[in-house]
Image (tube, rainbow, N blue to C red; front, side, top):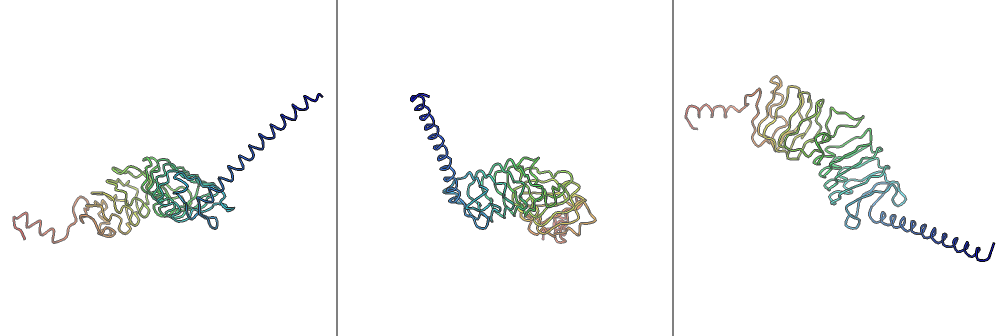
Length: 295
């Protein structure tokens, strides 16, 4: 082998070594930068993210599996609440998302990893979610975890998943429809505050609903609603601050319904079988008016 050939080979090897070294250093630098950024962006303790410095780190959140040497398992209470976040990517290590964790943001799409077994009250409420994928098979949910989002009618109803998907029990309403909400067939249980405080103008209950829990429809914009024959149990304050008249189809249970759970209507009048239930004084005044006599 000639001297010139040896020089060429040595030169090529040196160039390749330099390129490889640069790539390694570049990747190492990027990794260090990511780790440094992660350490700066997130506050973590005992495998739980407790805070996020959104002013420093931005509105598109990617949560890593490992932070400061700790596997990320829990998103803490209110950790990302009201931070104008537009997107979030959750790691597959997450098992628990506590109440209000991402409440009041602008998240449009969301994937819940398959290891998640708990989602707390209002965890993702008041966002702009149009696409939701839940990979987990069993999740215990607190009240209204997805209320006030922008899901289409087909995907708007969030069902109980404590022991697997149960399409008879609505936990939360994440739909964009506010004008005429229709419950899916098969639903018989409406959970606490499931449709609360969303400005819904009308809701149609199916003939299978038996249980309506505390505050289920509180704070909306109903003018009237019909409770079907099937309803046998009403919680407290279910229609507060929004309704004018209620029609109850099952006359046998009318005394059970009475004003129980319906204390603060804009106009406290109930209808039973098309007849208005009024106080004795109201009925007397009506009779006097008919006769042209004023009190």
